[in-house]
Image (cartoon, rainbow, N blue to C red):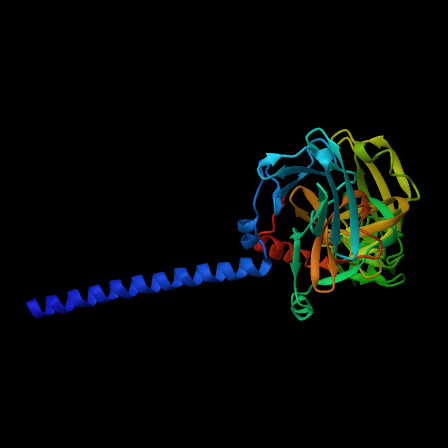
Length: 425
């Protein structure tokens, strides 16, 4: 290779290296700028950098020579404000400061909190309930001077324009009362109803001359199934179907002599039995006469029924008790031997507040839904009670009539987590 070619190759390699370094630097700067813009839009990371902390880890508010350190204390107690006062950098006796705080929450709710001295701090007289997301107005009086501060302390909140929310498939509805149907889910199988099964026998012994229907055929009562020549009279006679149904067994061939076995077995599948396994944990609540919703394992087919019988005997192998229901099956969706689920109604409760199971997400250590206020969504920590497949009772955590996200709530959670919302104490 000539020196000119080596020099050309060297220049090309250096050019590629320089271009790569420039491109990488540009991408890094663009990423940092994008991150700064994102965090500033949400007002979280930028705000965190600006918050001054006091010696107890709380937010420090300073006006002239007075400083207040605001903390939320919740170790072993419901959350409450504890505020420490300083003159310059020296602690101030709490009985020398008069303090009140207003918390402005979404939905035009305002919490008014008064403070009294306790030990070395001022203690609020009300629980700071979750979420700790609000605009705060603090007013203090010290040595005849009045002081005030206003700041935001937001968590679990995001804003999504209505058009964007529609494109994301976000749907809401109002929290309210429902009739909560409490259910237990059992598993079992579809069985042939023995009361709808016919074993077709010949009237006279003879020889099979013709077979009119095959295994798997559906026949109607009165249809000719086969022709038999009687051994005694040598006359032919017809064997007819006694019921409508499906031929599930055929025991004859042309030219064969009939015996003691049924020629055909026909079952009417327009009504089947569903037999459910009831285990010890459910024995006390599963009773005869209860409503039952039979469901295929893929969830594509459901049909109502009633529990007609609960066995007094226990299966030795599974230690379960058999419960049975007769189920109409005119469209043939249920087949003997098929595994199914049965949702048994064991109780009904009128509850003042309930939310859909599909709405619930996990946020920090709480089960939550996301309340909607115009284009703003905010977490609501719930205390939950009884539940079924679709609904769960709400004991505390959200106001009646509040709109909450019922569809695609995970997208709201993801947007909040992306914004880096903190739990600031």
